[in-house]
Length: 315
Image (tube, rainbow, N blue to C red; front, side, top):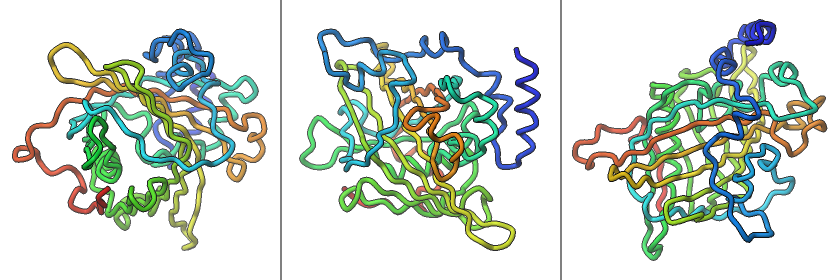
């Protein structure tokens, strides 16, 4: 491996807020490696690129950020995802796709999504592997054949389960009132990286590629509020897109495999000097693989982290 690159990243590790990036460097994917990730199969006969088509191209440039905000309704997931799942997720590598911005330039920008803990709140420690948490999907009345993500439950479980600590004090979210905004309030003094996170969702897409294959994406703007030594409130804005590929396994186990791509973008308010060399293109794409197994019946399931603290509003 490139020892010079490792040394350079090693110096970046002196920034205390950064995650352990040596593990990320060892998992860096080549462009050929990125092309081997388990995207969906190409769909024949389509002239317009659907989400499945774009993922089938295995091209990071297809993971572009929408330049204009649009109202995003809830994603309807296939009925076979309904229920509560025990999830084990593994970090599967990353790639720097930009031809105009070097890896060193990106690594010197600590507010790029994924380089600080909780900068992508649903994957609070990007390179940690494995992590364990739960996910829940439910079917409201009148929605036969579709289920919906319980975002409050899932996000609390992802944060607390991944970091193995009770950090989430409360989540405020109402899919009925506004499915595109969510607030996470952390327990006082539990993390110096964040006291509160505001998430704004945009441009959701979803597609049933086949009976057993479902893809979905959503773009997020995350505003993280934290304290500082002088008592002032620090505010950092990040933006990223998340691309999910769910595959129902036909091996009799009832399991579901999830491939998750997280495309990190630059923000003009945070990385002004580099922003126009990227604009809507990702500067890092992270990959995670997860296996979902149906959770045991409720009577034998131990309480999920912070469930008692989460404010979950009905649909």
